[in-house]
Image (cartoon, rainbow, N blue to C red):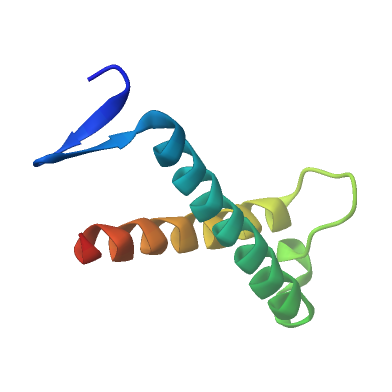
Length: 80
């Protein structure tokens, strides 16, 4: 069990699972940022990110990326 995760009768190696999680996160971040930057001109000024500042725009971007990551994980869970 140290080298893998029990998935019924098959085991997924930890290295493979880590790579899958990385690709899911990469997909979520890239697509989430693309969506945010396409929406940014239409957002209220308080929700727009300013370079090198912590602001509400970062929170909006984080929420979009997190929602996409959760949707990807949910979609993959229902596939298996």
